[in-house]
Image (tube, rainbow, N blue to C red; front, side):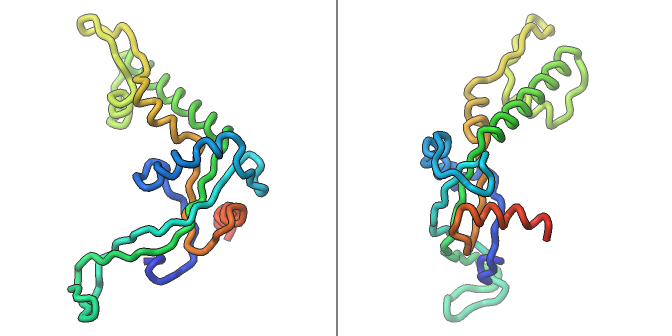
Length: 179
């Protein structure tokens, strides 16, 4: 609704969304090898990409002009600025966080402790477990699943409706917590 009403926004988007991953893949090498260094945060490199993105919303009223009824989904195409940032320090932090979670779930499995549903999903997704009868003999990382997850570690995506400058977008986003 903010995009529809032309409010200026800057918002964080998760890196695992389908429309941001191709952008990250396109600019990965440039960002990981220095790219454009962001001056407001020296540990970040960043790039800004202008995109026309489709937004869907449910109509509140019927429109004779567009021929849509109340409750129909309408698609708006709007220009947005996608700011992609990479930090090797953030990547290292996320890798360590994953390893700590892996080790905690592994120790729970080996000790026979109850796994929470979240830990069970984590084990199913990222652990290769070897059994001898009912006894666990080994636990290894599923390499493909980890590589897929780790591929986007260290990246931050901000989407802005008006702000074109990479530096200013990060400054404004960070200043929101003080407003």
